[in-house]
Amino acid sequence: MTAQPTYTLIATQNLTSATGIVTFSSIPQAYTDLLFVVAASVSSSWDISAIRAVLGGTNITSGYSRTYFQGPASTPTTGRATSEISLRGGYLPPSSSSTFSADNYHFLNYSNSTTYKTVLCRTNSVNTGSQGFNTQIQASLIPSTGAITQITIQTANGANLSSGSTFNLYGITAA
Amino acid sequence: MSVTLQPIYTQTATGSTNSITFNNIPQNYSHLIIEISARSTYASSTDYLTAWYNGDRSNIYSDIGLSATGTTAGFAKDYTTTAINVGAYPASTSAAGTYGNIRFVVPNYSGGAFKNSYSDAFMENSSTTVYSNYLWSQSYNSNNPITSLTLYAGSGNFASYSTFTIYGLGQSYPTSTPLSPVINSVSDLAGSASVAFTPSTNDQALNYSLTTYPATSTTYSAVSPIIAKGLNPGTPYVFQVSSNNQIASTGSAASQQLSSVNSFASIATISFPNGPSTSTPVFTNIPQNYSHLQLRIFARSTYSGGADSPAAYGFNGDNGANYTFHWVSGNGSSASSSSFTSQSNSEAERLPAGTSTANVYGCIIIDILDYANPNKYKAIRSIGGFDASGSGQIHFDGGLWQNFAPITSIYTNVYTSWAQYSHIALYGIA
Image (cartoon, rainbow over all chains, first blue to last red; front, side, top):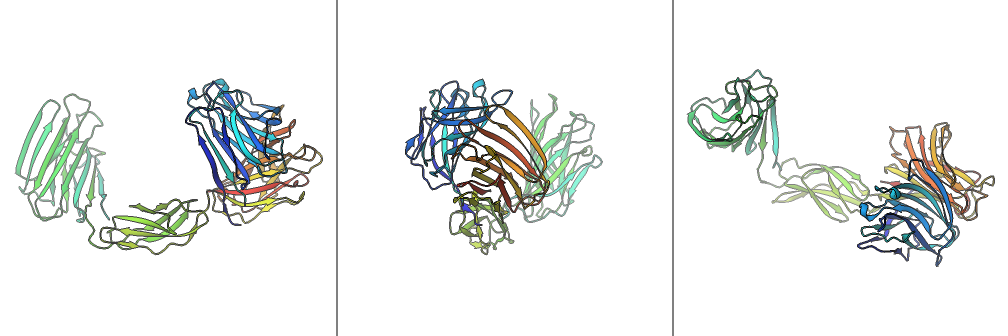
């Protein structure tokens, strides 16, 4: 077996001013998996990442579901949500706390046109606010078989993504 | 090239001697520097440290000094004396634990002229009256090279823990072409390489440069090893270290060839594109040059008896009761945790199975740390799960293979068989 180069930065966006939405379009289809790394904060006291994807040319705006296990308080909780309008990810801390989230979203086999897309999420948000204190693992489903060609991220409750937030999209190539 | 402060020798007093002598002083430095941390046993607040060279106690010394006590400045000079003043330092009635700090410098000690030197002596304690700074200039009015130095405590002995270290300061300049360095080893650092070498043996090199072939950059350093950065993973490189001075550069022989690995490299992938497979896929001949391994599983089980299946795995063909694993999980309505000992394989959770919603595949990422270490049991962590829009699980698992052997192969399986389009990818992490 011969090792091949694998881990490629596809695109990065570093916010120099607050914005409502960040878009990664024309995602190359040459990789096996995508890894979306988010370090973000928001203009309000807290909010939640809301990720949408374009699959097979269609912007998916409904049918997202997720099963999560999280520890925002003294007792861990699990929950499920279905029929959502976006992939809800990690909690985002307020920019006033000078902290950013540390979130990874793994889109495995994102370019196949046969299966629904499962997204494995590992999100972390730590600050002094009770709503922005969260560690979570989550399996999310995008119920479409199309290849993912675009990813956008905004917030679920309308807060802007703050200046200083960074978003990196990597491609991982299997042998 | 020796442009260094080289420790020659250190002596530590035990309280029973009133002098310290350094004999057989090497003659290949340009200066001597003596660092002194000392205290005297003399029944007073202050004692005075003096010195002489080569055992010479004739009236051949002279000195001149400035002192400051915090309230007054003083001046003194001596000539045709049998020793030189080096500086004042604390004695036994001075605050306990205080030691004077003296630097004594003797330039051109091995030359043919008279030996002019200087010393800076600092003495401080908690008293408002007993502290002083002394600046002395001295001369040994002899053309003889200094081969020994005696430091004399004054009226008392040097107290215990007083230390005296003599250094040689080299300031020589190259006079000839440096000899070739010799490359000892080349180590892969995933995108970089560390090249260790033995320096030139004729002490003429001012620095060393590392060149890569094919060329990426030239990196300079005074010491071994030198790290070449920015290598293209997978490209074979050879390396050469050159010793350099103003006269010339001399290159080493070319190193052995090295192909650097990527910091995150794909090793192999097993896929099932054409339909269910009942096989137990095995990754064999796993390279041992990474730090960690990662398995990324995109899969589904054809198991018809339920909605989910674990992904089981093991190492080196071992299916004995040598595995332990535990997990915490959430299924959307309840959180749970379980542990399993003496298992015949480890598990990572969890994949959709036959009765789960069609087209839904689970994802599991398994990290195996320090897999090639022969002195550790192998610890594993994984996150994984799936969501099927109304059902699903998310897991965080820890596992242990109770075996010291480096992992050279990994087998995996699921209930019944792997569904079509499943794949398992193995990566190496540098």
